[in-house]
Image (cartoon, rainbow, N blue to C red):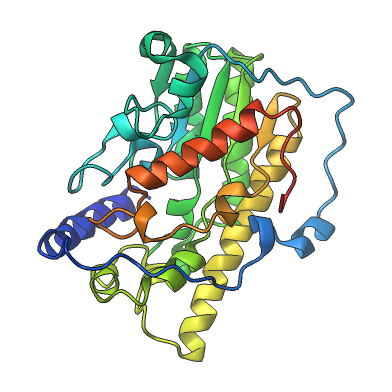
Length: 310
């Protein structure tokens, strides 16, 4: 996994040079692509026994401290500059008032400096969550945000994507780690973004598709203009894996009384070129980070947990 992350960052570095020379290029055209609503595979639901319903779900819509775990999205990678984290614009814990992060909305500017922690790491996948959760638990936060899965699906080939059973095992281990040291912490879990919609929206942009050719999420975005049956089958396989990951996120969260899943809100969101980084046409821009913060805040402060497709 670590080798995959290093290759990805190296390729993005080369891609950034192209992007810098063409920042005046037009933004990606937004278009819809067929995808499973809420990022969940209905057949996978019927094939697995449903988790036992909890008699009483505990949820505080005004947590007073926050720890964020996950990958480069939560680190604000490529949102401000080439090939660099920009945590100040993170949807979860950023200080940028334009983004208006979740921590800024929940805690306020004075409190968030001492009561919010960004423990995510660029390049991380689900296997990194247990270690990140251990670090989060040490702070005894009232809320932990989780956004992970894109790197598990983005691989050099579909055969190298994280198996669903391994993804589930990592999530369960992470939750067990948190419950051991921070039993009362709430957990908010974001769904994995719709990578096929990203491909559909970006393939019409000449510069964006050239950058993708350098290896950014090759399993989905490689050979972006190839519409052959084989290429479509490859993209469908990645899409099905993302949907399966989201099913795991929902299931594991449902087993915990203090966990809330976003109902597929991030997967369902129709991101456009304005929400994508100009350095790699893949990570969220400042605007994209702001949209993620809005989704999270709405779901965390709602009286009821969001439902899939709502």
